[in-house]
Each structure stands twice: as C-alpha cells, then as structure tokens.
Length: 162
Image 1 (cartoon, helix red, strand yellow):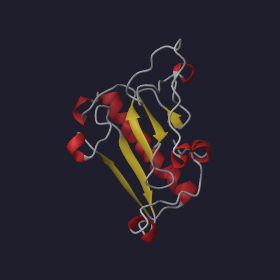
Image 2 (cartoon, helix red, strand yellow):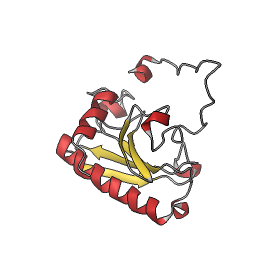
Image 3 (cartoon, rainbow, N blue to C red):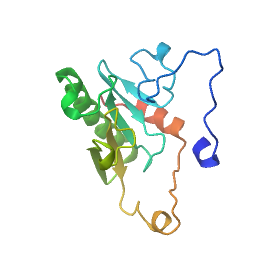
Image 4 (tube, rainbow, N blue to C red):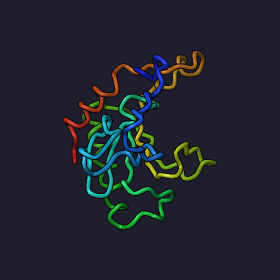
C-alpha cells in the first residue's frame, strides 16, 4: 500500500550501519541479520523465495540465490539445484493457494532483456488467470491487487509445498 499511496522509503538513521546497495543482498540466510526480509516467503541454504515488491499479479514472487551473481551460468551447482527446487515448490504452493490458470516463469538476464535489477539474478514466478490483462490494465493503466503483500506472504509461507 505504501507504493499505491506514493510513499517514499524512509532513510535509515545516520548512526545505522550502511545497507548493501542491492536490495536482494539485504536479505540473508539468517533472519536476524536481514534488513529487508518482510516479504521473504521461505529461506533455503543457497537461495530463497521473496514476493515481488511491485507485483504483476497477486502471488508474483521471485526465487534467487543469496550470492550476488548476474548470470545463470555463474550459479554453482548447489545454487542451481535450490533455485530449481524452490521454483517447483513455488508453483505447487501458488496452485494450492490461488488456483491460477497458468504461470509465467523466467529470468531477465541483463538490462536489455528487461532486468531492472540485472546485477542479481532472480527468477520470476507469476501466476496468471484468464482475463488478468483486461481493460483495467490496457485502458486505465492500472492493476487491481485484491490482497496486501504481507497477507499474501503469510498465506504462501503457511501453505509452502517444499
């Protein structure tokens, strides 16, 4: 809702430790050391799943390694395996929770491919429903999101099919 209301991020106090520039690197394996983990759905050893702060559709999440790498070929075997396993678990979970008609799953590797945060690889998992790109999106230039992100995160975490 802060995005919808147009609120800006609040600057940390001057005495606070500097935060990593990459928003994905602010999320760590240990919740006690994370600074931006309110939307994390599940943590693994090498990767995690987090809701997209600016979702295309309700339940839109991303699966990514903790390590800051830009290209899929830069992942080690453990990261590759866990990104794949978390993606499969995300698909199962969203199917249980939201019954979407389809999914878009993919990587945007590099800025020219549409990767707005291309320095840190992340795989999108976007649930889709017939008609979700209707007149509201096309003519009015707006999306309807029937659930707050925190509520979506809680629902997915509660029903995680890992």
